Length: 269
Image 1 (spheres, one colour):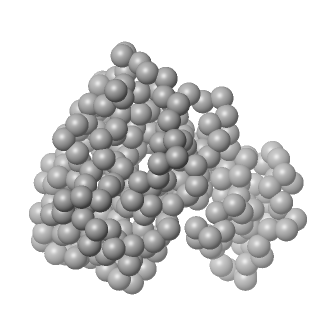
Image 2 (cartoon, rainbow, N blue to C red):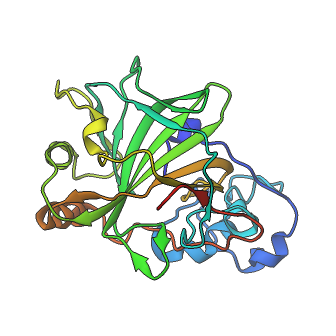
């Protein structure tokens, strides 16, 4: 799960840096920002920002390695609950910015977009959504063809992510619009298409059954304190659409992380 960099909340601890191999951390050229990709995810926490001189600023992604509430996770061992807060998806039609983030196909909400996700009485505005292929969350031994993350960020910094698993099936017309309008060059925006898109068309019919747990961003800086809600019913997209998605970004998935003392709850049948 990736969010706009201006909204990332870096939670970095100075403790335990030696345990993540700081002495062997990749060295960057002066002036460079720490570069990460999915091939080096095991060492995200050790990536050094050589523009800084004091820890923990030298290791802005340390939480990726020393955090204890990281995402994604295996959702299989659900502790079923009938008293969860209800989800209410209130997405509206938007004229969004189609964005190639350099790590994923992403759609950014327009400046005055009013779409929200309500979790009980808490309301979270939709900031952006993006795709991973294959899925980041797994259920037992099952990995899905892809995963869609709807990222919601409140003014107080609280983050809630609605996850949708993708499986091969019928074509999704909204996804096709996104694929056809996403720039092929990294870090490139396409904000002026005038195309109307309702993110709700990227949801399965059943939004009442879900898994939930306390986790993190799934990309650096891997900040914790993120509320995760992964829908039980997958969304179908065609094989051709999956191929088009993977032609832009394939294997942009973080591997499942340890639950540690956390519990995955849900109301999945």
